[in-house]
Image 1 (cartoon, one colour):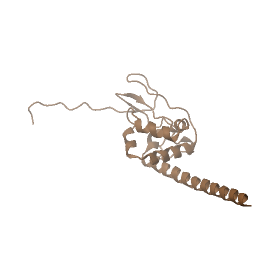
Image 2 (cartoon, rainbow, N blue to C red; image 1 turned 135 degrees about the horizontal axis):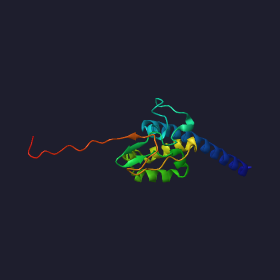
Image 3 (cartoon, helix red, strand yellow; image 1 turned 135 degrees about the vertical axis):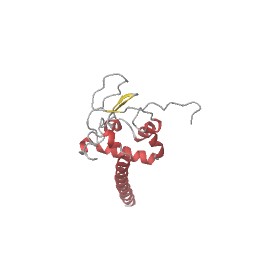
Image 4 (tube, rainbow, N blue to C red; image 1 turned 90 degrees about the vertical axis):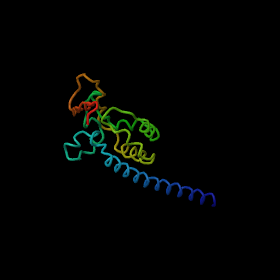
Length: 166
């Protein structure tokens, strides 16, 4: 009888623990959605986001190639984050973002202000969307033909230095 009671109690504890974990993951996903929105990730990583006043169907969210940029560095296309997170664990995602260096216009330095918990929550949200879309176009070197659409960023020349003048 005591073995049966012990097995029942263990099962109850495991079920309660799993249920608490589900609530935490739901909270994590919501927080990740907030961070993705607050960080303006959809601006570049979701096609049509800016053109549609910050809205897109769920199946288009974070599928890459939304706002592309061309400048002296070449032409960059934001990657499909939904496909990317399917290939990574949360720990790998954090390591990738902690060491990320990209071409413009991705503000990769902003990840240093986020905790590992924040990055895990972003991962949880993006992962929860599931895989969708196709890989975005790869970087195109300066002077090479690049598929449109992209925003062309023309940078001004640095100001001339005047010697001895005020």
